[in-house]
Length: 396
Ligand SMILES: *Cc1c(COP(=O)(O)O)cnc(C)c1O
Image (tube, rainbow, N blue to C red; front, side):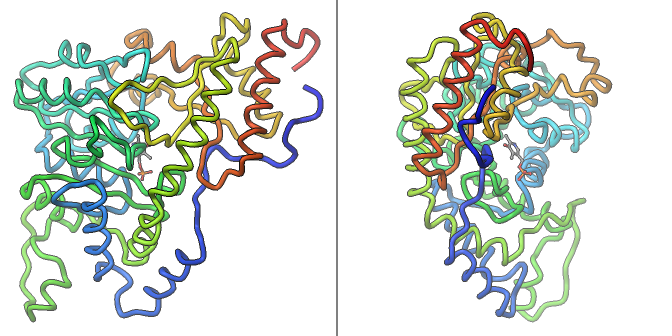
């Protein structure tokens, strides 16, 4: 209560568009190709390079890229794929799109990433794939997941929509799993407005992904025109999931600044953790050894018992301080669609569900000023101390 720490609202995430990004887009608009032209391959090559993968295939969104990966992995009716409930619903939806069944496995309490022991318990003869998510930007336990996959002959599709630039044992995520998926939505590390990418070491997965994003047609229009050919064949049922040259030009320009922006994200997260470690009643996100966190999100855990307060009250108090806080995530199995279709009642994934009840995502994006960062710390500390001292008995 009282006067808010901040006078203007601060969102939880925000794109960083600069003059050169605008210039790159304008150049494409003045050129002969505004979609499926040279910028697509340029952006794909640059992304492959950035993550150290052989192949990269651009898609119209991260969700479309997940769908393409589910197709390339061969998921279909009768198959199962094991994934985490602590994610955006698109991770599980891509399995459903292919007529297969998503099977959730609970997360570990520290990183909130999928627990390999829980994955092992969920593997059946119908399991075909595992979809770990690098939650908030912290790589999943890839070694354990990849070795499980190898033992059971499963495809690993890593949802790295939070994790562009994250490292696992000194290696950038993007070439460690069979396929890795990124998103270029404006709140993510870099943006093409809407867009996504699959990176892979496999020529076969890349080929299937390319087919799938272009109606299932075996050759792209531009290739044909170059060769003066009119003939094409549709060999599978695909979609129009193409990313435009306009988007790819923006992505290329953004990717050139990714190192700088990532460093800024890390700097902000470090400052938060330093401040919140000293604040009773909250737990900062943990970072395991051997990992470089990409800090897409900063989910702070509020100890509801200790604060004698629900997350929702803390949330409202932070919003009243003009912090654009958010919650990541409502566990996927708790959404009405998943409850109705797959019969979940709640209680199946206690670690994810308990975390959900206590998580609040604080603002974190590279364009934040140091004064914004200090506002977040001050406002959060004010709210937490207020509740820790007994809370507002009278109102709110
Ligand atoms: C953003 C996101 C997606 C979907 O990406 P879009 O580009 O918005 O379609 C999928 N999974 C996770 C974990 C995400 O954060």
